[in-house]
Length: 292
Image 1 (cartoon, rainbow, N blue to C red):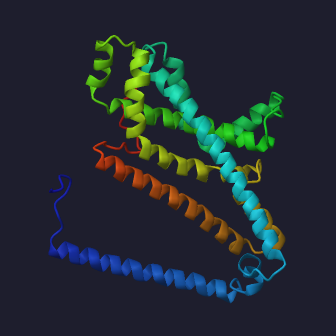
Image 2 (image 1 turned 120 degrees about the vertical axis):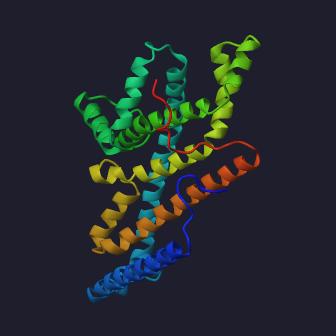
Image 3 (image 1 turned 90 degrees about the horizontal axis):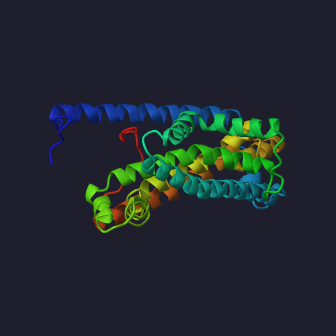
């Protein structure tokens, strides 16, 4: 199938692209070599710095990995809670926006556009400031207060994204789906819950899984505000004690990469399965959905 956006490159263009790729690769390798040489000259590859992370015979090794495990657990707990609450709140917001009248859904639209436009870190900071300034007691909730500052902030942001993904999923369904439900005597609410939503959830599943990666990565924003000792903040504290920030943060980064890679592969697997079953998966970008 020919591409309608641009012509296929000819032999000369392909040769130029190959030369450009080779040159870019050589420059990248040279830059990496320069960085590695600089790090080696400063002793950043010494076993004294890497030992607590890779040498089980050192006294610090079990302590360091015990702390990293605690940080990883804290990150997964915060991400898990934010995912559950974001799905619940996002589904409710999406349904309200689609089912309410033109004027009665205005508050919902304002709410969605407000938190959709705010940076996540600003939302988390606003949650922290509001709860503290209003002296709201959240001590009855399990876990540290910092956990809930992060969870509430992530939920406020990601729920509106999920609401838009849900709306895009329903909008992608044939109009006959809703009309068939109404034709057999179902109410609009029943049609939405029993006909449209199940199909929309299946259609938007790859986009939802991609959003899980975003939620997991955004938990690290708590380290900037020092509200919650998740994986990144735990790594910062470890590096301050061992005086090896490059080594510790390199390991922390690898952990994030592995987890996010697995989630991304899960999204790709889900998309392939849906494609085989004849369901067209929904992309994560919902900007093409007309605002109402």
